[in-house]
Structure formats: C-alpha cells, structure tokens
Image (tube, rainbow, N blue to C red; front, side, top):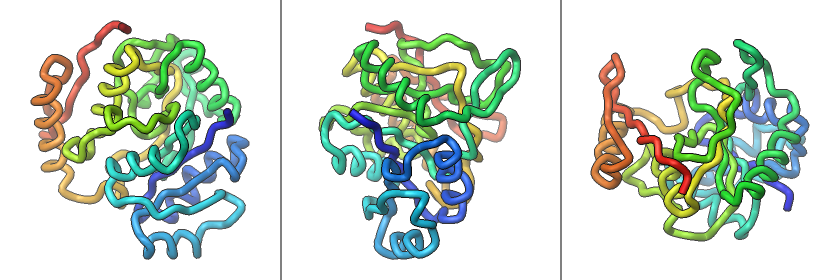
Length: 249
C-alpha cells in the first residue's frame, strides 16, 4: 500500500509553504500524497487562497488542538493506510554521516523504506531521533521503548481508541502515543541516525501558555504511567518528561 503525508497545521500558512511543503517537494514526494488538516473554515479559506495548488492534494477541515487533530486524521483515513505525519514547519530531514548531519534528499524513498522495515519488524509506528545534535545520535535502528517525536513519524493506521492519546496529554501527546503503541505492539521503531531541522515552540501551532500546558501534561503522564514516566525541569524551569527504557516485548 502506498503512503500518504498528513500535515496538521494551524495559523502557519507561510511556514508550511516555505518549510514542510518545500521539503516534501524537494524530496520528490508526489503532491497527490499530501493532505493538509486545518482547524476550521476560516483557516481553510486562508490556506486554500495562499498555498500553490502544485504543492498539495487536499485541504481538510479537522479539529483544533494537536491531539484532537491527530485522532481526526487517523479516523479520516482507512485502516491499514500508511500515514506519514509531519509538523508544518519542518525545514528538512537530516541524516548522520560521520560526525555531522547532511540533508536527506530522497524523502520519498526514505518513507517507502521505513514502512517496508516496519512491516518486516511486525510493528506499527516508526520515528526519528528527537534531538538535532550529531554528538548524541548513532546509526542503530532500535525497536525498544524510545520516544517517537511528533515532528515527523509514520504509522500503519488502526481505528482503535486504545491508541488515541488523551487531550490531557496536549503538548506531550507524542509521549503518550509512543507508550500506547509500545504497549499494544511490544515495540516501536526509531531511526537514530535521522533527525529534523525545525523550530520548536514557534508562534502558531500549539499556541501560548506553554508552561502550564507542559506542567499539566507532565503531571497527567506521570500519574497514569508512573512505571514509565519521570518528570524533570529544564534550566528555564519548563517541566519535561522522560521515558524509562524498556526492552521490546
């Protein structure tokens, strides 16, 4: 089955044109594979008016909020569909070569190969290294419990509530999604030599009040998955979470 690319986006029409859509275009991803998911009719009209038609297939009005939108996307496509989910501000994907990062040019081939490997491993979600720093990255592809960041990931679609993160995990929904897939499938696949160049916490997207939302999400995850989640604070005081490393089941 061929893959599609789903891009949840909110209030970032310029960013999506010059970043994610440009990235996909340069990566030889067919525009007919690309679907944009916006929050409401007003956003639809803005995106439809401003984005060149040669960069995407369809704009769909989904739900506001990244957690709700991710669930909407899964319900929108049929079961078994190969879905690549990308944030709207991905400047490029990069690959570790030696001790430096180089641009990953052939995204279409990477996405195809990722799903082939996923099927071979009998798993249902793949992801990339969450930190853009070649010092910490390595060439191994792992299948134990490791964080699958929401910036860019792929999954084989299933209409199962068991796999849908809670709205209470908003801003950290990708952590809960990682846990849910791991619990359901016994493993998650991660390319530790691939990462994304993007600007975290940019305007638009998730919006403001990030401290409170991070704290609430971290508390929720810690309470629900106390055997897996630990909480720590960054130097700026921002609450963050970390996954305990668990072997593939």
